[in-house]
Image (cartoon, one colour):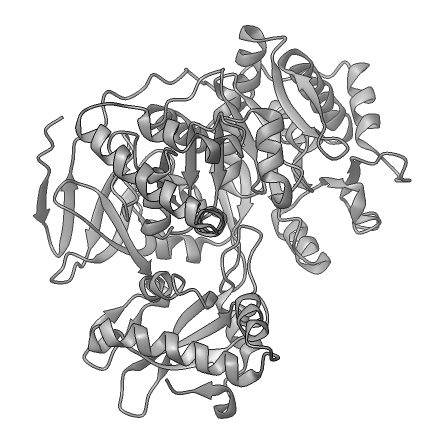
Length: 592
């Protein structure tokens, strides 16, 4: 497709008009409501496996679409036996019970409140209080956390032989004998989900979505990505988060695909082999770690390095000659270690290092990156197979309008979007809603970015993280973090600004050294690692970076962080927590 987008400025707003490359949009099923996702798939594929969940290590237990749909209806009736206006929280690991409870609440026409299982007890109770939840489905592993709450009925999931006042199977049995009527139609514009944000920099807010906002994101995503009932998704991300909750949960079930829940991050490779998964969603940290391990294994031997170099060269030549699929065949041994069936990798949740993305594609993997937020259900844009530009987050989805507000001379400004997948607002917080959502439906993402001439969207960083250099230029911490994380002695890092005596902000970085690498190096020299080793290795990293960085992007100081940086369950760094835990006393700050 010949793509000729037009950029125009209107009152300091850059408007992007674009066509969508990558071939025609794929057809998406008609989905009147969220319950129709399961009802439709159960009619079309009654005996097909819907979900597999971990049993003992290396094994799974499954449920087909017919039984899944029946269980959802029974649990829905069981809920209505308990309350006629369900506002139901669900907290626990990804499981068939979690999935059933989620759909059952929608089947009643109620409101679901997915809760992060990694939160402390007090935070969970706060969410239950502010959301108005009158029922909670929780993993029995939480014990008695929810048994004494006033006006909240607790239901233990995955209880096994554990004692609990009310368990999931009891609700299901109650529903089987219930005469409660389930809705035949739904008001898909009313609140259906209250999803609490990760809270990386402060108090979480309850993002309200309707069935319609979620379904519109499923529909538009299916138009961009070719998915069928023959696919199997391996689920590794927590389903309470909307990236997994929409793209890794609602989307595959909407087309009759299968979801296999992983035993855990340690067992992803083994689970890929066992389940023959074809699609894997993950956050950048997983992809970058995976790529680094693959390359380290290849480079561990001279023969491996030689074969790798020859394979890359041959693949490039054959692709120029129009021969497809050769790259995958050349690196087949790598693919076999991950089951041999993976046809698509999807990255989201944060920006991925373009080097890792390109590197995985050079190994024959097909990978696309998308962009979105909890407030946008979540996907706003995505690359497509055949229209994939490294470093970008692709094109706006088909029904989304976008613009750049107050762009600088490079076209960088705040990304503002409008579309059917935008949230209804923040629950019980009209002031916060008004700050980001206009009366005519435009949502301020809080992210800085730009569109290139072809219409690809690039993210430069979060607005609240931007550092203002002394020359007045914006510095985006995420860009520097991507570069620093490529250094072999750096395990991870976080860039932030500190007010300097000469006005403006100077750039500082929390650095977590790769201590395993430092220990290995010290032992090869017949000695023990010291604190000076960490400081000198990190100083060398910063000096090397500064040699090629623009003046206003150079790092002025660094702090060595002793542990892994604190993160949310979706592996985003909790910046305020990291700074607080690091402390900012002068004795802890080193100059490069």
